[in-house]
Image (cartoon, rainbow, N blue to C red):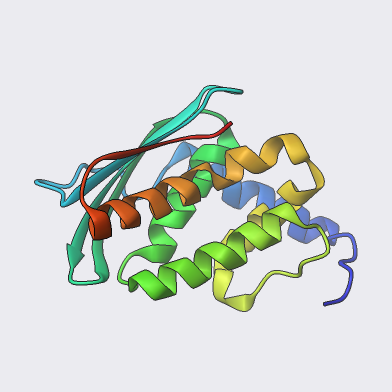
Length: 159
């Protein structure tokens, strides 16, 4: 993997607009009637919180709802994540989650094309304090998948 060059100004602005759009107009906000699983996430350091509701068909995520409060990074990441994982299998989601978390925790990791619009959050890797904001939804998603497999309610708290 090579080192990343600085983003070109037009892409930086495009990414900023994409993040703000997801923050102002979050996707998948409508609650799911009778969800199979509900997972909650909370970051006590900055107060970000979210709830994810899931509907499954076997090991495929067929429905997801996202609700939360917090900074633009945490809320945009949750909204973008909800779009990216809908319709995927547990294994697909795990792979995508690993790629996303690698991208936002290591500034030398180039984004995988599979991440699509999630690449807009790549710059978070340069700000360690924001990484937990960007990954909260993803950790909560993984908790929800574990809950589906193991049964029981799971709440994720960043520490």
